[in-house]
Figure (cartoon, rainbow, N blue to C red):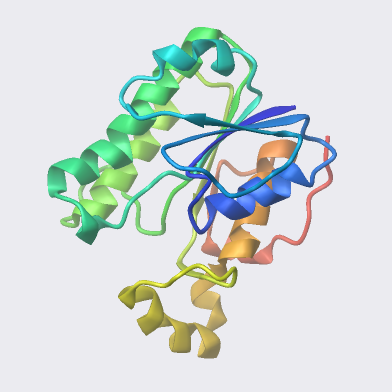
Length: 216
């Protein structure tokens, strides 16, 4: 299978990338982003792309893809409200539109978040934006969709933590059920994309309880 990853330099996306590079089920991995991943592997091809509201220039790449891992995102406090909506929803919508044009049997794995509200009734911007992204994905014509809603994500892979993650680290040590590690989450996302799963939306407890999946 041929894989496309967005957000491959992030805390979770980098774990998805590592799993795919080491998987015998994956023939090639294309990473689209603005900066290099730092990985060096014969399966890997990195595509520098600046305009995430327009993927039409990558149509020939998209036509060969079987699995998309969408791990792109931004912390709400680091950008304006308008930019948060655009990065969370509009970027994904632009990619999905061009994936739909291929007419292929594509699996789309969305790295979402606990608290996402597809009905957009929440008073919180984060929940509404994440919920709208989920809603738009589910309405798309893509063949298979999986949404992952982890709780707290513990950076066990050397990623630099921001202040909010640092505050949760001691709580996670005492009550690990509130979240998952970045490596565990990345592995689950990658495995589900390859092998499929009986659920479309995987909550934190589903992710924590998953050990391994039999590959098709």
